[in-house]
Image (tube, rainbow, N blue to C red; front, side, top):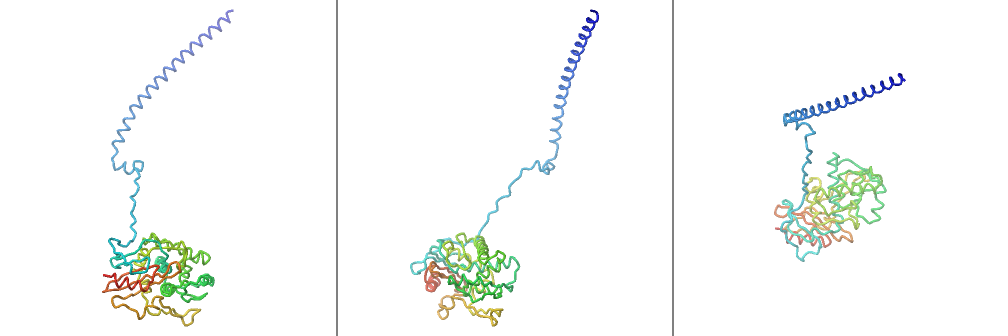
Length: 351
C-alpha cells in the first residue's frame, strides 16, 4: 500500500515539473520572438539609410540598377530618282513604258507608266554586269582573273535561242571580257559565265545562276529598285522576271558611277578579246545598238552608250545614255520601237 502511494506521488511531482518546464519554454520563446522582431525593425531603417547614402554614380554602374534601353531604329534611306513634277510623253512615242532622266541631278524629266511592271528582256544585263563588278570589288578580285566555261553552259542557251557573245566551251575567259561580252553583244554565254565565275561552288550551272540571280535581286533592293525581280542573269523570258523603266533607269544611274561599267557601256568601237586557249587569235565584240546606229546620228544630241533588249513578250527595249550641250541624260523605253522612240525622246523632250 505504501509503495503504491509513493509511486503515485512521484508521478504527480513529475507532471508538475513537466508543466513548469513547458510554461518556462513558452515564455522563453515568446520573449525571443519579441526581441527578434524588435531587432528587425531597428535593422531595416539602417539598411535603407545606407542605400540612400550610396552616390548616384555608383548605383548607375551597377547593372541591376540600369533599365535596358533599345537603340533607336536607324532609318534606311534607299537611292531614288527625283519624281517631283515630271512631264508626260505625248502619243508621239510607241513605247508603252518610257522615262527620261537628267543624270547629274537624277531628276525624272518625262515619263510614261514609269512604275508599271514590264518585261525588261536584256536590259537585265545592266544589273548583271553591275553585280559582277561590285562582287569583284567586295572580294578584291582582279578583272584579269579567268574562269573556264563548262561545256554544259552552252546547250540550254542555244536551245532557247539566246544571243551569244561568241565564247566557246572550255574556254578560259577573263572577268573583264565577260563584262564586255555581257554589255556589248548582249551575250547570254557571258552572263551565265559571270554567274559561274562567282557561284561555281553552288554545284551545277543552273544552281550557280540561281545563286548569282539571288545576289542580283539583293543588289536591286539595295539600289532602291523595289519593283524588280529577276529569274535569269540574261533576261530570257519568264513570267516572274520583271522590272519597271524607273527601276532600270535607277540601276543604270548607279552603275554608270563605276568607271569600268561606264567604259564598257559606252564602248562604240570593236572590243578585242585577247587570245585564249580556244581562240588563238582572239576575237572582236561590237555592241548590238551600234550595228544599227552608225550613220544615223542626230545633230542635236549624241547617244554615247546603249543596251538593247528584245523578246516576243517584252518587245523592243532600250536603255541609253546621251549628251546634249555637255549634259548627260538617260532614257529607258520598253515595248515599242526603240530606235525611233529614243530619237523622239532625246530630240523632243530634252531641255
